[in-house]
Image 1 (spheres, helix red, strand yellow):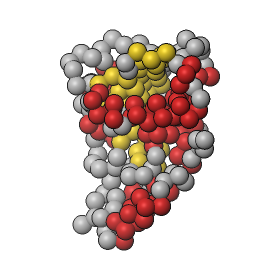
Image 2 (cartoon, helix red, strand yellow):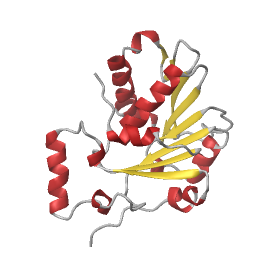
Image 3 (tube, one colour):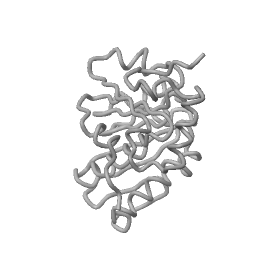
Image 4 (cartoon, one colour):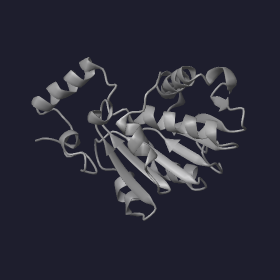
Length: 205
């Protein structure tokens, strides 16, 4: 049975139109966002939700795999109509996965929520065209380098930043947690692991 993590609880408290969610290895940010969106689709009728990333082929073995796992563990899968990357709920809501590796794929789409996974790998113009008509925008990314989320989105008054670390994911395996902490001890870590309030990564010298 899926239990809510601290990451999910923090995400659920966000209120503004644009959610900028940063998280390093093991933070569970993408899993938590997917779980939030499934619950939103299941509990709110006629919602149109898009989940986008740079490459659809990669999402099939990462994000979509986790999405199906969550649906099964929640007992929703048998009640969802599936057509390739489109998942329709019985209340009229749907969640569709799209890759942004084809020109014009995101233009002109109107929806309730757009979630862009690994947004730092997507050009800003592509993001803007995809999300401009969405009622809510969500992005996630690893704290590597500053990109358009920091220079464009976080200057807006309708955007808010949430920084997550592996400490926000209570269900991280012991082995992965120990590995992350070994990296920290050897100064290979993201500075944000110890300083989650930092809006982007400052690499150790």
